[in-house]
Amino acid sequence: MVELKNSLYNTAAPSTQSIHGDDHLHATSEVSTPISVSTTFAYNKKEITANNYGLDQRYIYSRSGTPILTKVEATLSTLSEGYAVIYGSGLTAAFSVLVEQRPKKIALGSGYFGIKNVIEQYQRLVPNVQVVGLDCSYNDVDIVWLESPINPTGEVRDISSYALRAHAAGALLVVDATLAPPPLSYPFRQGADIVVHSATKFLGGHSDLLAGVVVSRAPKSAESMRVARSVLGTGPGSLDAWLLLRSLRTLSVRVQNQSQTATRLVAFLESHRRLAVVSACHSPSVQELAIGRRITAVRHASLQLSTTHCSFIETQHPNGYAPVFSIRFATKDQALFVARHLQLHTFATSLGSVESLVDWRHGIDSKEDPGLLRISVGLENFDDLANDWSKTLLALDAHEKGSAKL
Ligand SMILES: *Cc1c(COP(=O)(O)O)cnc(C)c1O
Image (cartoon, rainbow, N blue to C red; front, side, top):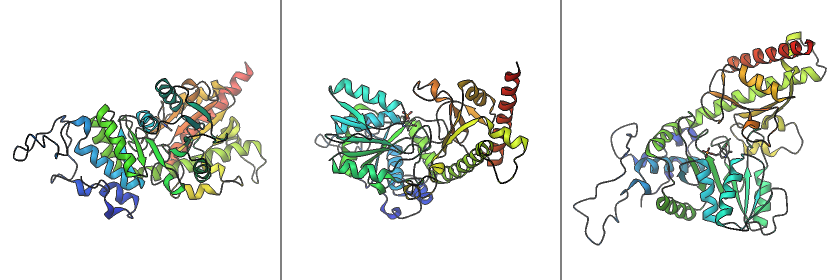
């Protein structure tokens, strides 16, 4: 069996790992891995006998693996400091963790609503599974399921403290780190046992593929999950796997750039919000006041830093925060006005892509605040995005003044 991880690059920088993590698996002279959609692989006529029928062949049938999938797993294993197994979606990855671990009691925090649906599906298979809150007692808890950064706010939780609590209770800590893939965060360093990602988001990064990843610290657990995936065919299709490999090459530069732009945009919006409520050292112009006046809150990891208990954030995010934040308005009409008026932020769900996206989460998850918008920052220029916000927020202010007069 070929070693999945390329130990040569264990200590290389993430940008190098994402380009060379699978060098040892290059089988042809093509510099870019060839696209292959073959579902079946020819037997080696010289070596095959009745006793070893296909057994010593690495690839036989695509349900159990393809060369491209192995390359994706090698690259991601090297990048994420664990053993990666790829699935057809983020939620298939999450479901596979539950089936592998068979928890009877799960502690679940806030975050992406789809995880609750996955747990409901799991409860249909395994009756009497209990779900408790993340901050409840971990008595008899088998799995602590933590999302950090949290969808939709981009705020973070202290992974180390949950790891300590989970391990003291004999539970595993699973971290959904979709909003901050490497090199933005490395949850194993804070004690996570399993990391999951929706690869549809930043790992894919171009809104053109659906996939998920489970990264285990233990190679055995990854191998056992890979066997189950082969039996069920829960891996991604060949074209999606190829697109994912293509995307991983630029992961590091994409997400660090997106993270910087997002953090600047958050500072820009938050400073305008504060001008409107706090008396500033300089007298803000009428226009500056109008930009910030309708924002009721901005939420992001960079704004948690000002609170005293958040010194862990810097350690958890050595190369930047999630390129996702949320902004809140007083009413759903204001939020929808903004979502419709932004021009460089496409009004669509999902996150993590090269284009900036704005989503009204209440429309999808009725428990979410109706005045809240989730912003996923893409690779556009900061000034252009900030201008888009200024224009939109000025239009909102004018619109609100107009309706007040009616
Ligand atoms: C999108 C998302 C998922 C689900 O991933 P899919 O690829 O859509 O199945 C899981 N967790 C988080 C935090 C997400 O944002």
